[in-house]
Length: 428
Image (tube, rainbow, N blue to C red; front, side, top):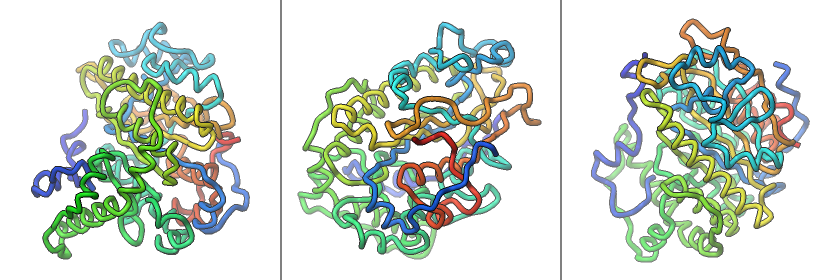
C-alpha cells in the first residue's frame, strides 16, 4: 500500500490558491547506450543550427506501464498478477509479437505504422522514491535520487552548458519569443536555470492577450527572502515574461487553425493550442503539457482507459496537423511520468505506486518504430513487488538533447551529468 505521505505535496498552484493572488487571468505562473559523437558545445550553437522542437507530455500521478503496453510474451504471469484489471487480448492493439497496446491508444497505431513511434521500456532511477512530490522533483531536476538541485535539467541546458540564460538569449531570437512554454499551471522545476525560471506558463492565449492589451499589471507585495517571498518572486517573474511575449504568442496562435479531431476536454484544448503555436511559427523550442491524474489506486480499468483514450486522440491529431504543415519531422514528443505502478493489482481494482515505466517518443525524426530497452521481467520483481528499471531517465533526456537538438558532450554534461549515453536506435 502507498503511504499518505506519498501523496502530500506543496506546489505553486496550491500557493496561489491559498495566498489569494489568483486574478481573472488564465495565467499561472548497458548495451543500450552508445558513445556520443562530437557535437555542439554551446547551447547557442545548438539552437542556431537546428529548428527542431521538443514537446514534453507529463502524465501526472504515475502511469501504469503494464496496462499501457501489455507483455504478451508472459501473458499468463501478467494475468495472474492482475486477475481483475488485466486486459483481455481483444482489448489491445498488437505491436509486434511481444506487446499489446491498450485499445485507448489505438489512434497511435497510424503513427506506429509510419515509423513515428517508439517505446523505451523500464525507465527509472536507482533507489526510487514512491512519493509523488519527491519522485517528480527527481525527474525534473535530473539528478541522482540522493541529491538535491535548485535547477532543472532543461534549465541547465538553456543555461548554455555552464553559462547564463542571458548568453543564450543574446545569440538567438529568444528576445522575440519565449524559449520554453508550459501549457498548464503546474509547478515544474525542469525549467529553472541559474537565472531563475526560464519558461512562460499559460493556459489561455486569448485571455493573456486581452489582459496584456488592456495595460493591466498585477501588483504583488514586496518579495522577501523567505519561502513565501520566493513564491512571490516566481509569480512576478512568470507573469512578467508572459505579458512581455503576449503579442508574439497571440500572433502565431491566430495565424493558423486546427482541422484534426482532437476530442474534448482540457488536454485536447492544450494540444490544439500547442499545434497552433508551432504551426504559426512562434519559434519556441521546448513545450510542456501536464495531463492526468494517472494515480489509479482504485477502479483503474475505466479511469485509465479514459485517460489513454484522450492521450491517444490528442497526440494523433497533433501529428496529423503537423503532417499537413510539413512539420512532422521537426517536432519530437515524449511522455514522462514520475513513476510506474506496482506489478500486482491491489484490493481496490487498482495499482499502487511503483517504479520503472515505459516512455513513449513520437516524431518523423525517429529511426522507425519499435521497443528499446529490456522488456519487463515479471518474474524478477524487487523486494516490494516492483519492476526493476533498466534505463536511467537521464539517458532519455540526453537522447532528446542529442538527437533532437544535436547537443554535444559539454552541454549534455551540464544538463544531466557525466556518464549518461544516448539511447542507441532512437533517432535516425
